[in-house]
Amino acid sequence: MTQNSQTIKTIQDLANNSDYSFINYLNIDPQSNKDGIDHDPREVFSGHYVLVKPTPIKNSQYIIHSKILFKELGINDSLAKSEDFIKIFSGDSSELPELMKNRSWACGYALSIFGTEYYAQCPFKTGNGYGDGRAISIFEGVFNNKRWEMQLKGGGRTPYCRGADGRAVLRSSVREFLAQEHMHGLNIATSRSLSLIVSTDEQVQRPWFSKGSYSKDPDKMIWEKVAITTRVASSFIRVGQLELFARRTRKNEHKNAKDELEKIVLHLIDREYSEKIDSSLNIEDKVVLLASEFSNALSLLVANWIRVGYTQGNFNSDNCAVGGFTLDYGPFGFCELFDPHYQPWTSGGEHFSFLNQPIAAQKNFDMFCKSLMPLLELNSTHYKKLELIIDNFKYNMNDKMENMWASKLGLKSFDFELFNELVNLMLETFVDYTIFFRELSSIPNNIEGLKKSFYKDIDHNTKLQRSWLNWFTKWNNSIDINTQDKKDKLSSKMKSVNPKYILREWFLVDAYEVANKGDYSLIYELQEVMNNPYLERSKELENKYYRLKPLEFFDLAGTSHVSCSS
Image (cartoon, rainbow, N blue to C red; front, top):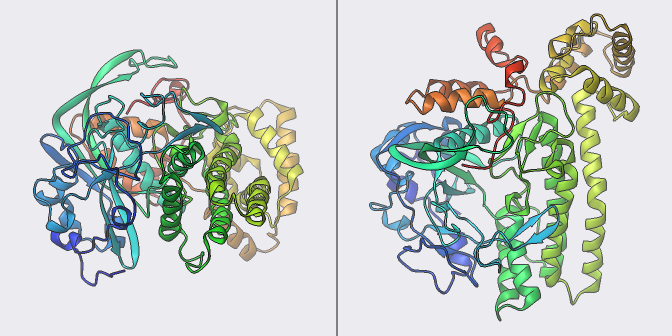
């Protein structure tokens, strides 16, 4: 690996950090065009990737970049607004440095939903046409001894586009750009946002909701500006990719199927788990360790999602990164009114709802391990070890969840009875999830300090007030605050896991609606607030972003629930 010693000020400086391990090590589709002109839907029968050239958006305009990520990568902020940068990260590859030429690619993957394999979403019904339909990786390199891959979301059609236009719209791009950096600010593993660029005149049609609609399904077609957000991650390898090669191996679809499965698994280990898995081990030992490491990473990730109220509304295997971080901010949402069955996506169902996410994670983990099994079929000892890891996932997940709930409540260890009583009270009182735990983190003297989070007025409900008082007394007796110093330290610790600000959908709606008119000020403001979600802010910002969801937004289409159109 190389290390950049100077700040990156030009695109050539960026290119000098390139190291394309994915396309250099893995197999190209034999039918892939070397010039990358491969934009029509087709079956891809083998290989780990296809070369595909992005389709630039027209009349591109810079909106925003992540100063935090630029600093991590050693990139000078001035580069983001340069003509060269805007060209490349809006999909224009006409003037790439030599080191970056003909090195953009898309990948195929399989799909399973809640543990069931699907082929119907593939236009050929074979699974050979499903994959990165509009996500195109254009760069892989090493910055300060850390490997990153850069991918255009909305970069145009690929062989996996299934007849779609390959574009992302400004609405969804604003959501994804802000959400990724917000999750990073929440201290949750995630893909990152590099830049957001919009076309001033190119538009595409998408299904969406009429203004003021309460429909669960989009009721009209609208024209929307296209945009490209560049997302960045250590890799974009998904459970679905391993599934694809495992399916081909099981069906013996071609003579190199098992070799391609082994190759993608080894590359995954090198990209995501090289510090924890010894490269000198045999493949069977590596596979078992990989399963164990992913079990820990995935269970921790999902527990952290629930800690902050995040719901990945479409947690299919193709949206599950094997690096154990959050990937694909399509129909996501943050739980406001506490509801275990909260689901932001109209087509998601309860299986991907807020407190069902540990079970959804189990299903994805099962499919991941099933994909590893062909590499262990001749080794019964390792096969049994893998089965044990699968069986233990639910216990691993449960431990992470209990530790998470204990930390939110400021407890040294999880107390099921106290927690269960709280859940019932939160449901009965209609409590804002984020505001409640943040107010609790201040360790108020009585329940009056918690009422800021209540949607329901309990002042005239003696029974409910008494129940809250009983719970509050039990909670106070469970935490160690017998001196002011201990109380202050516990409060600080609780505030470090209970954020003050979350990216509520009604904030996002305002931001992308004014952005559509060329006003990006709300995007900038949200970036500042949501990138540091644990900080206290001015009274003005607190009044604006730390408050209950207005009643008029409940059940409102495009605000309380969204479709997957992006």
